[in-house]
Length: 112
Length: 113
Image (cartoon, rainbow over all chains, first blue to last red; front, side, top):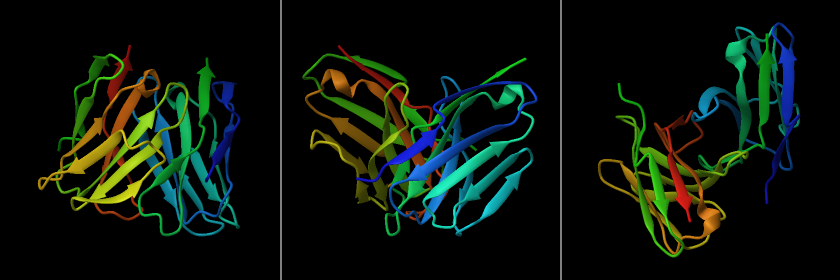
């Protein structure tokens, strides 16, 4: 079955440092979504990428979708304590409706 | 506007029992999906319903079933509970059945003893 892996599993950074999480799928995706889940909370949608090679920015967050549509990345510039949480990528297979396959997640901790 | 609501918030059951979890989507949303999230892992897709029809099913045993009502609310039923069914059950709604942003509810924490 389809697998979506993320690295690293955990990341501790000092406030102000940059952070990147990488997402890799075993199969080609029609699109990919990113979610953030705060401790004790539920996933919150961040963005959806559809096109091969697409890059989108949201303030300090930059999202990329690979040329082969099998990988993606999320980069946070100058992390803040409010960035703490687990970041999940979630892939959609072509013709798969809204069946999201979530990645393993990257837990980010930001220290002052 | 109210977000996705789920009930109950927490539930404790014993092995062999059955459970019904409920979800009310955001007003106007016609698609509801159910996910199981075990501690420390990403959510795993269980079902998607759109316009009261099943649109997708994940790799879960037949003990898991769901349905969607005319008002687009949904129920997830799990029979013959196992210890391994202990998890956070998340409901997510979206406007349509296609690949769109999903809005998650707070979840139901199920503990099976």
